[in-house]
Figure 1 (cartoon, one colour):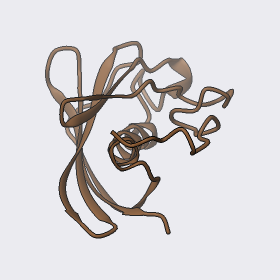
Figure 2: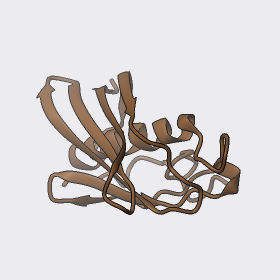
Figure 3: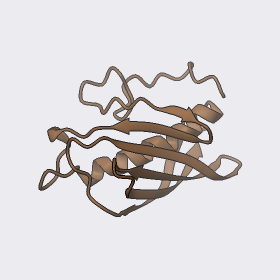
Length: 134
């Protein structure tokens, strides 16, 4: 695994510890995936006691990019992302977020991600193209 200590990310909206309004995801590499768990609160709601889709997208984007960051040691920026929402995520239900790389060529990393609900059903899936910064 690459040394990522040189990169300051404490204010990252999704994973930064110092961001007072951030999601504070705790991500780790588990085999060939980056994994995090998240429990949406009322402040993450859209309509009808369900998590906001933009935040669902943020979770997927972050875990896919973080896989590249943790394994390569450089920040990767989203060039393209496609998300398929399969079911809503209830407020208060802990979800599992996973991201992994499917292809790599030069600075480009093609990634996939998935959010799984407590019952094992997939709530959302994504593919993204991540580019290493210069």
